[in-house]
Amino acid sequence: MGSFMVRCYITRHGAGLAAAVLSGTSHQPTLLSNSALVLARLIAALRGEDYRSALLHNLAMGALAKTIKPARTRFDWLNTDPAAVDAYIADELCGEVFSVGAYAAMAGLLLGMVDSSAAERIPKELPLLLIAGGEDPVGERGAAVRQAAEMYRQAGLQDVTEKLYPGLRHEILNEPNRREVYQDVLNWLEATLAGQRDAEVELTTETLERQDAEAEVQAEVQERQSDE
Image (cartoon, rainbow, N blue to C red; front, top):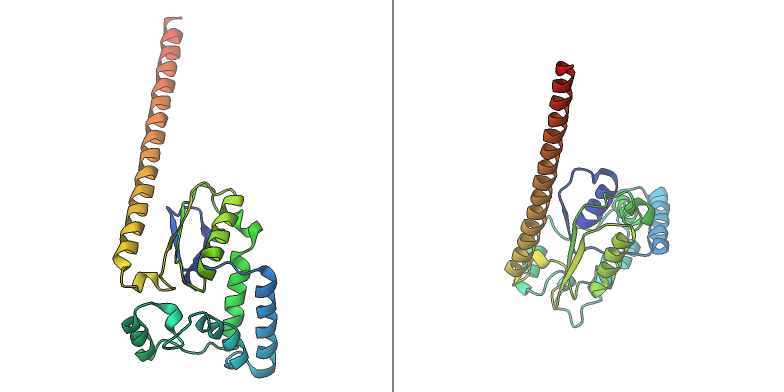
C-alpha cells in the first residue's frame, strides 16, 4: 500500500523530488477498482465504515493467499522465508482484517495511481525505480509492474526503470536475499543522484559563463559611453 500512496503523491507533489522508488506495486484495471470502491461504500452505508466484511477480505487478501500453492499458511504470499512469515503472524500489529472504510480508501488509491491523466502531471524528469518479486501476486508476478512502468513512459517520464527478482514474493526487502535488493536500490540512487549533481554543475557553469559574458558586454558598453 505504500507504493500506492507514493504513486498518488507524485501526481500531486512531484515537483522538487529527486527520485522515487516503488516496491511491490500493482496496476489494477479501472473497472475493477471502481467496482471495489462502490462495493465498499455500499457495505459502509449499510453497516458502518468500521465494519469488517468477510466478503471484501476474501476478494482482496484472501485472493492473494490463494495464489501460492501449496501454502503452509495464508500469509505465504508475503515471503518465501517461513521464519519471516511466522514473525508476521506472531506480531499482533500485523494481519488485521481491514474495515470497509479502509478498503474504500485503498480502492480510491488504486484509482488515483492508474489514472493516466494524473500520471501526466508527474514531472517528466522525475526518475522512477519499480522493484518487485517475480512471484509477487500483488504485481501479478511482474505483469502489473511492467504495465505501471509502461504507463509512466507513455505519460512522458524520461527515466523509468523496473526490476523483477525471480522467485521472490511481496516483501522483497525482507526476503533471504534482501541484501541484493538493498544494493540494487543503493546503486540506482547513487547513479541517479550523481547524474543530477552533474547536470546541476553543468547548468551552474553555463549560467556563470553567461553572466560573465553579459558583464563583459555591459563593461564594454559603459567604456564606449565614457569615451564618447
